[in-house]
Image 1 (cartoon, rainbow, N blue to C red):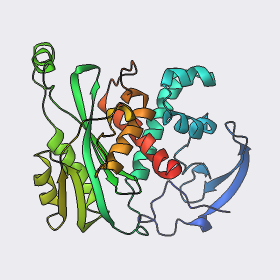
Image 2 (image 1 turned 180 degrees about the vertical axis):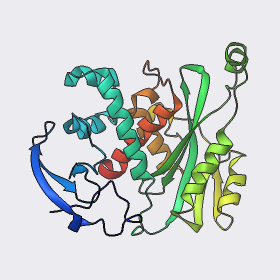
Image 3 (image 1 turned 30 degrees about the horizontal axis):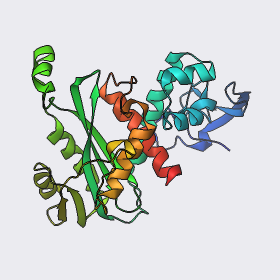
Length: 291
């Protein structure tokens, strides 16, 4: 089967299609042993293959991608994965970045065949980068009942309570970016959530303004927060029926399966974007295979 040249824009040269492409042998791909067809373009003279358009293009160990994706979402660290598969930590780190980008593209993709979401639960989780004196907030949106993770956003925040004074003394004032991150999250959700949806959250005083800005016609139900249970990494709530169970159960799943979110862990986050990528990898696995 012929393929159009990936190096020529059809807007620049509409005639650059399969008719101007000829076969030029094939090669056996080292990473998985598959035979890949080569082509050459008669318009630009450049060569390409069926693999050129793949997002795994030029990867030498693409056969590990799916295994690593599942294990990243199952509580294993990069260092341990490098040891188990006999590869370098640099390779694992590169795979992690690649899988994180792919996961974000998947969970943020708007699928027209899906109906608009009618009931949504959202709230913030908290973690830290490098030190507990540098906390971060993770805004997460979850579909009610199905527990499908719709999107997430990570933002820095100032330390609270007894750690606040120590944080300022050691690292200086820390900007609060939670409102901007929540706005970015809700802006993306407007494409997937019904404007008349029911949104459920706790009684955080910052939430109503964000909901009103992006979903002025929606109903916003607020519930009083409760003390966490010992089980569920402290995310599940004690005291009978939980109106935010879908969110809290999902938050507990994050804590149990993303090693940098474990309670009392030494797998701490060094960069916020890596935390976001790791959570996206778990969200993709959670949506497509767990639920």
